[in-house]
Image 1: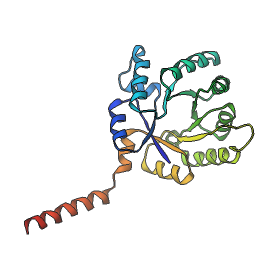
Image 2 (image 1 turned 60 degrees about the vertical axis):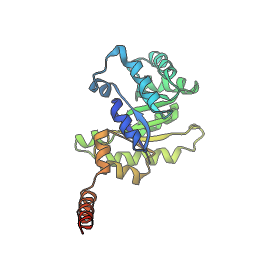
Image 3 (image 1 turned 45 degrees about the vertical axis):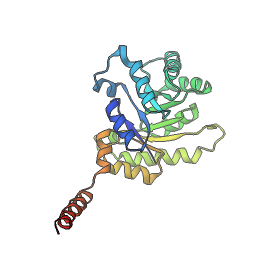
Image 4 (image 1 turned 120 degrees about the vertical axis):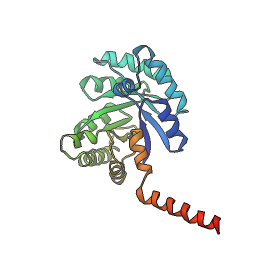
Length: 225
């Protein structure tokens, strides 16, 4: 399973990339707002992320409402850098836009997916990536991992179908915990897009820290002998 980082923060992207594990970046309007983003600087910021990622896929989300406007904005966003993927929220308008854009070679990340039927529609429309959300199910007392399992199985069952003649990858989104990452990997999700805070939690374990402290203490004894 590949790791994307879910952020618009350049410093977080640089640090995660420095770990040698980063396979892509996803952004959205909320993440851009969190870093103090301004409308006038949005495109420049996406280009900075794209260049920083050295060809790795970077999802930039369209805020257009109609299919035609999504097509226009999608073409423009994808022209900013060759590794920019256009992110669209699942709806009737975005399905129509995805069909047109995918036929033109524009990669689409269909986001805000919460059901298998939505995922299947996105795949058939031509989406390159499909982003089912996990954590938001947990927020309302439902099992996000169970829903993710259903999406993965449905896409895998029909990925060979003549109507889905392109590669489709499942991006596990709305990841909150290392357990979300573990369960997504066990289910065979292609990608987990993880906020930097959750990514750091994946790296940490109390027994690892305990072991390091013991090794350091023992080495100090060796040095003093």
